[in-house]
Length: 201
Image 1: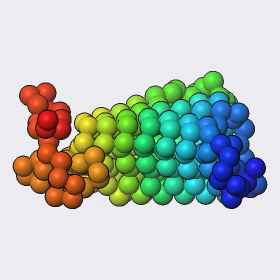
Image 2: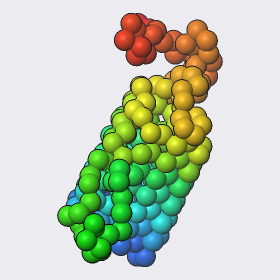
Image 3: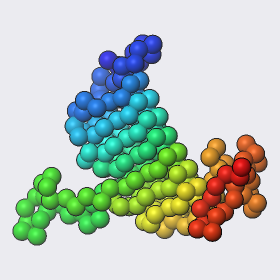
């Protein structure tokens, strides 16, 4: 089945040049040219895996996830509705080496796994890098080229290297104003004592 196949079926659509070793690919998911998906990966339904993406190391991808061209996803969990813009890397090993202390080439069982978690609805901007073990909160927005080494709160707008919070992001993706209102969609938020945002009733 190709990525351009008849969209009236629920079958996944996989470009002929893609290398997909997993059998866990959800309904209507599209995997584009030269993507590589390893055997232990699980892909949900209605996802888009862009050109040249590599999804590896038992990563778990939810439903309606967009991973755009040239991303590297190593062991991460992406909840439903997550978007990775082009060139994002989600790293896994906090102390990578090519060889063991004995000088042998490292094998599969020699890597230390601290995968990234991206929560529901979050967006990671183009060419951002997320360090091993980091959790990105629900509806957070990580700006282009940002290097994230610490957990990110829900709805936080992050930028820079190293990343710092520069504001809050609405569910619709727009930056909230100083009153925690969204000028684009009209949603209004409250900041709770624990620092988290919630929609006003």
